[in-house]
Length: 280
Ligand code: SF4
Image 1 (cartoon, protein in one colour):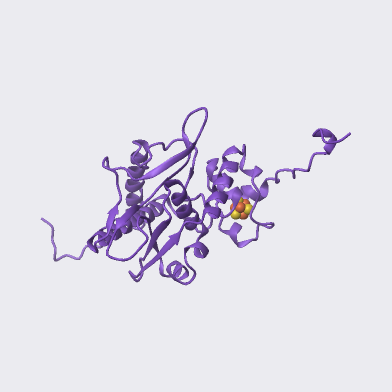
Image 2 (cartoon, rainbow, N blue to C red):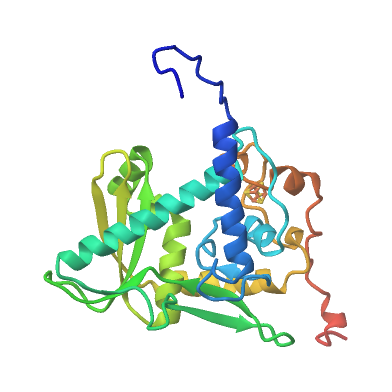
C-alpha cells in the first residue's frame, strides 16, 4: 500500500510526456490517411493541388508543394505532433461553430448521406484518371434567420488574437490570399456565389464573420496558374515571387534553401520569325 504521508519526489517526466502524446496522435493520423480517411475525397496518394493552398502567393512555392518536395526544417521548428494538434483544434472549432450555427437556426449541411464531405475533383490526369485539383468545403447554408444570399458555402477557420485582428481590420481577401484563393476556387467549382467565412479567436473566443462574394477573375487566374504548375516538370520552371531571398515572403518559406540554391529556369526568348514561318 502506498504511503501517502511520505513526500515522494515527483518523477522528472521532462519532455517525455509530450513525446508520447506526439507519437500516438501522429500514428493515429498516419493510420487514418493510410486507410483513406484522411481526406473525404479518398484519393490521398497521388500528386494534386488542394484548394487549401491553391492560393499560395508564390508560383514556385505552389509548385514545390505539388511536386512533393520535402519541406525544409526551419529555426522555428514545429514538430509533427504540434502540427497535428493545430489541425485537431481546427476540427474542434469547425464542429463547434457548426453546432452553434445550427442552434441559431441555420440550415447548415456539412456532410453527404454517406458521411463524406462535399467537394470536387477536377483536372483529371489523362493517363491515370486521378484528379489533380481537389477541394472540400466545410459546409453549405441553405437558409437561416438572417437575410443572407442563400445558398452560401461555409468556411471555418481559427486564429490567435494577432491573426484575428488582421482579418477584422483588412477582410479575408487582403489578410490572407491563400484562404481567399481557397474560397474563390470552391465557389467556382461548386457554382455558388457567396461564402460565409467565420473565424474563431482562440484567445478571446470572439467570432469574425464576413460574406465573401465570388470573384470570377481571381478564380480564373488561380485555375490557370494551377494548370501551369500541373504541366511543369520541375518547380524551378515556375517563377519566384521575389527577386531576392531576403524578401519577407521567402524568409518564412519551407523551400527557401533549395529555391535560392537552384539556378532559375533560363529565360524564354521570342523565336525569330524565320523559325516560325513568318519570315523570308
Ligand atoms: S523562397 Fe521565395 S521565391 Fe522561393 S519558393 Fe519560397 S517564397 Fe517562392
